[in-house]
Length: 372
Ligand SMILES: *Cc1c(COP(=O)(O)O)cnc(C)c1O
Image (cartoon, rainbow, N blue to C red):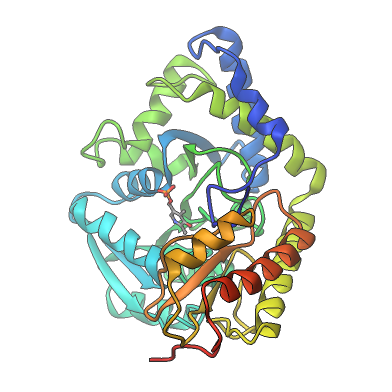
């Protein structure tokens, strides 16, 4: 079964094989392993040891995003968050429920965030200390220009938190050139092509000491993760880590380093193109125009046919070996297909054939979009 969902993704068997051992995470050998793993990740983020530290947090992407918001903003602190789609909205909710003030910046769902709109909003409201930007908006499939957004934040003298969860490993990130970034956050189970259970924040060292005590949560305090690691040594953890998941990630990083970030992005882009052009040839309508379609996930308009039924469609695709999301995150009905993971354009061509067959099986004859 191929997982064509935007995380957790299809992984290589070598990555999954790393789960078959018992590992003692408090052992000295594990610390050495972990310190090396963190430095490999930091390198991929373009971080450098004098300015950056890579902080691991057990759990999913929402956890590490919330931890970054709680750590770098004090209670009541104000953050501008472009409403890029489902994940921009999630960042807004995480900030609000943590007692921070999230100020939404309206962004058309089918457009990239305009850096000059960020600049304008920051100049109009000096009380905004931060911007929170989703790099790859997994709701729509659009990749936002983090470099240009960051530059606007830098000229305004503010700070930025980057949700790179569905970007990191494939889309470029060079934190050494982006001193305005307090933290970029991501997980192991998307473009790193590993398994779920661990998140990371690559954070600015110079910002962390002043942030100790902001979080209002011991579990989600990145400054405390940092100070504890300084005390206990590189590669140490505060609480039990998912050791096997980290062992799997180490194997996945071998594959990423061998492939190269640029080649991985090219492969995902070819996956996306094969799917995007393939569904168009089936008379289906992709939700985004090709000019803004990113490489991570493609939404396709649901066909305007009374026989359309997302669940039946998903089940039929599953019986053909392709698993897609059983929900959509767009305002109008769509189905969503992930283009990331250990998959190739040939797999995507197979998925297109399976989509054609599944539509026939559930009795859809009219494939034009529902454009209500
Ligand atoms: C997947 C994702 C998250 C968080 O996902 P979890 O389910 O919490 O791991 C956050 N932001 C973006 C952009 C994502 O794609």
